[in-house]
Image (cartoon, rainbow, N blue to C red; front, side):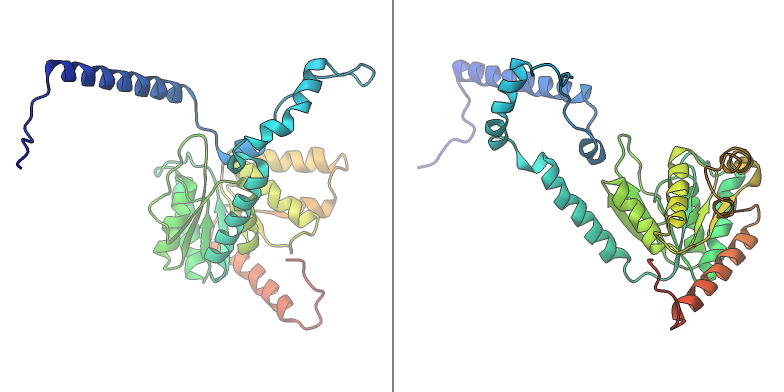
Length: 303
């Protein structure tokens, strides 16, 4: 029996279909409207957030609402999606460590270059970052950056121009940060702490170009780990003495003067305005480090 695939629905059928499609569209529109009003939370935000509770003085009995909420907490937990809880995030964090270690385990000696994502290609600092990375790459170092635009892009570009490995460790942010086009290895992270571990573990020097809060975070993370001897002393070099002059003055005239750091701590930072000098400092430090590592009588390093 043949079937007529061009069957025309009756007016009644057509009306029902249109009503159904109209309801479906209205539901989808409500959902999209709701979604558009909410900015998606990053995994870091979820990890670092906990539910709020009312303040209760130790001398007062807990409110009945709180007692009732606590009594039903287990029941609610049994019906909760485990994959969005903190214990589940432990597995996600662990997987990020494993993926990062797998990707970077066999890279050559490397230098991490940090700086502002807002630096434009016509900025002198951009050109200086390209040149610094190119010289370091030609000297045998891979280049690791945050994988984004600005100084990160410049450093990855210089790494490829110098013929060495260019690595980007990107991070999930509330606003999109696309990877730059000069990466040989690109790794995406949800958690800042995992990403920063990769920078420290696989870098033999930090070169810090002008930047903002993120750059300062990476700078002082390195200084803290060196100061507390969690890692071996490796060079931390600031590019652009004019940009960093105010910070250095404050470190010496305020922090050191008031005894908040020791004189040795203040000397952990080097400053240079010359890419060739930066390359020389990194090479000399790495050769010293390598010789110390090969000394059979050396003290066992933490790093």
